Image 1 (tube, rainbow, N blue to C red):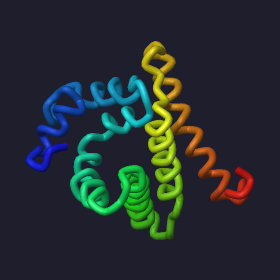
Image 2 (cartoon, rainbow, N blue to C red):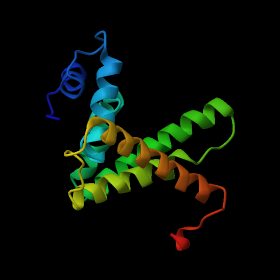
Image 3 (cartoon, helix red, strand yellow):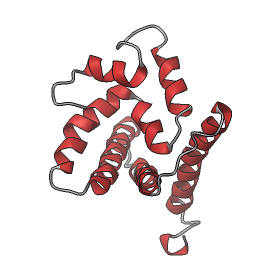
Image 4 (cartoon, rainbow, N blue to C red):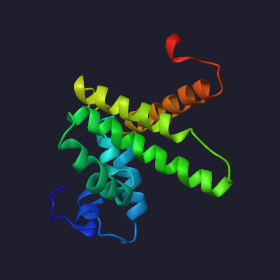
Length: 154
């Protein structure tokens, strides 16, 4: 994203439709779930949220951290903000989204580092793979948070 990109320009680039246009949700789901890699999934998922994460978290972090670490930290910040929202809603401390999003960030970093993609797969397979990666990281986080799994056993 260039420094001069507005939210509307960013959303149109990610979704292919202007901000608030009819069919925006469907376009986001089609582009993200049908993405050819997990990093690409995140380029299309929730472009409004990612606009602000990019502008206020990723861009400042990448100035003094390696890109892979800035990506990981951006996912962690996003998770922490989700934890905070749920904590305020439930009025009890929640610490689930931070590790979950950090695991997803790790999958993004590793997928990029090893150039893992599934562009030769059909749309159904890409959707399955992207959803499976989200579910797998959720499940690992659940097992860790419930004490059924420890990091030393992974």
